[in-house]
Length: 124
Image 1 (cartoon, rainbow, N blue to C red):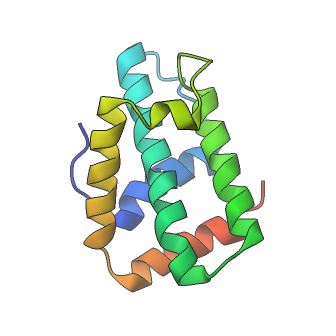
Image 2: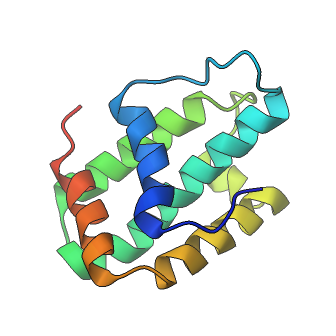
């Protein structure tokens, strides 16, 4: 399971994976571990989608980029039929999501704004 780290650090890991076009290519990971990483990335994107509109306002580019992040993460999930809606019912995902929400609450507004701005300014 993930350890509590700053909101920026937590979200930065997932966002960095997309920016670098890194795929879960680490052959040392089991399928379950790789799926957990995908769930952590999805949870970070969901928390950004929940937190950022209050910080950056209604922003179509932000919405588009979050959607891109979510779709990119889902492509790395072992069950190719998994959808964002379906994963919401997953027990492990719910736990990871709760941790991500808690990390966001414990993060300064400046850090939150920086992460949100990173998503708004992301160019695929």
